[in-house]
Image (tube, rainbow, N blue to C red; front, side, top):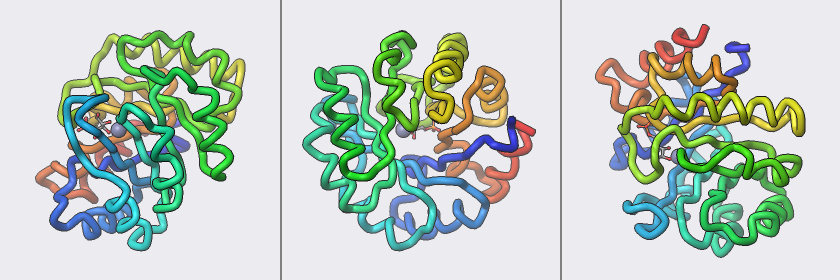
Length: 221
Ligand code: DX5
Ligand code: ZN
């Protein structure tokens, strides 16, 4: 099981002055994909990066780029992120009145579609949309900031989502995002996660990105 767990390096914790280098380092160290957090200062109380950053990263890495849209109107920006080079578009369930349409829009662009749920959102809201998804992302912190502590209360929900995926859409990935490190990664994997997003524990480890990724992998062996 843990051999199949994938690691998505979240660039929010990277040094933006040398983003290309940091992404290359993560790729060389064996990260499976790059996770880009887009925030608009409305959907979450923070502003991060947008389309130009994804476009600049596309030619510097062979890894898949997944784009986590923490913005009020994700549907307005799907085409732009797809054109810029995103392989997966992750949209929140919260505040999305037309989720089915948004997911179909992502698929019509030929991209992988994922739905994200916040810590206070129950697993069962995913039931009807799950058959259409390539990925579910369970937030293990409140979205908006890196370097927050993992919320243990989300573990029971990860287990519930795992059960739903196994029943309804076994190929769908179950990703977790927030506070993932050598202590919490094994808990999330034991609960059923098979993709781990990690920002701080990859890019802010004083031992460097390669050592950090090696340690994370070792924690889930
Ligand atoms: C939080 C973002 C995360 C963030 C995780 O809103 O969605 O992807 O980068 O950061 P860490 O790994 O530092 O908790
Ligand atoms: Zn994220």
